[in-house]
Image 1 (tube, helix red, strand yellow):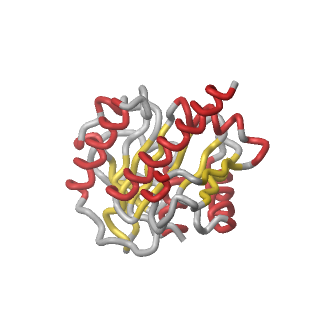
Image 2 (cartoon, one colour; image 1 turned 60 degrees about the vertical axis):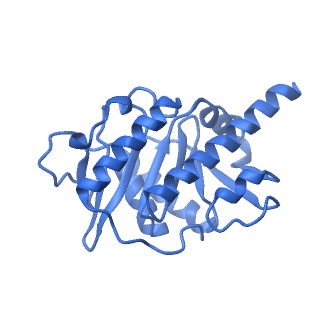
Length: 215
């Protein structure tokens, strides 16, 4: 399994600062344009609570003050005003299934294109690249990473259930794609989740540009 051990959760204040900084960095790289994407970090295990970006906020302008505190039922606990992301249930599902400390979701051009191009194959196989060694537990470029592709849906309860089944079938996956939607990845903490997104985004762009060159 890609997430091997849970870390001590961050405080809400620290998590909020880190999430805002990561959002700005991803926005600058074109992975979170406009209000797209969402980010979360575990701040408590018992009871489960997440620090999470709100719905409808430009990620390039996200500040720590806008981060919400979300409980295990996807309800806002913090005093800050803001609407929880529609995809909160997906984050909670991943945290529970992977014992993740953070979950990040990006909407880059390349992950969107490839999630559609390979949809009929139900996933993308990535192997032979040195950058794969940036993924948790991977020690050689000969590793084969299978990135499942899941049909998108506006029914978040149904989609969360589908994600749970997909993660169960693919215990070594470091992420997955929602068709025509974007990439999800996670880690034991925000640092690892950020690294996984960077690695997978690099690999997806490499695959996409390679297909362009071969045309």
